[in-house]
Length: 161
Image 1 (tube, rainbow, N blue to C red):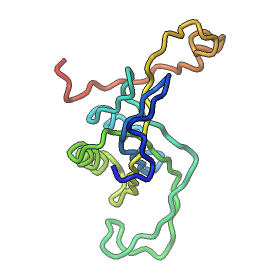
Image 2 (tube, helix red, strand yellow; image 1 turned 120 degrees about the vertical axis):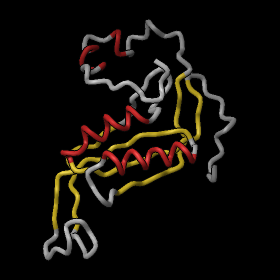
Image 3 (cartoon, rainbow, N blue to C red; image 1 turned 90 degrees about the horizontal axis):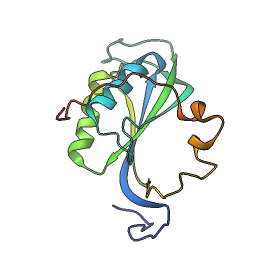
């Protein structure tokens, strides 16, 4: 990894660090549900003992004008549409990155999606024996809210189940 910060051997009590790729995709709000379902189905969005891990930034908008050669053809107006950013990480692997692009171009609604890729360090918990820690979500009165609500789960196409 080309980085000015070398963290390979950093010793942390509660976590370890892994080199990974952070991918950010801008998507019109109406296209987000189908794209995040497909990302979770076709990519190993794993963080520790969790999968389907991604983050959606809401309440943005995209601004553009279609030019000659676009599906819409040349337009004389600048368009805006409500949009979100979908952020996820994958291991540093060229084949997996190519698969991510395939999923985005297949299931995304834009013909020219805005995709940013960054090399980063991500933390992974060492799962300390702190089940009695009063700050953990399961020990708090708002545990249900913090843990979230159930949503649809798509089986991973690459699983052996």
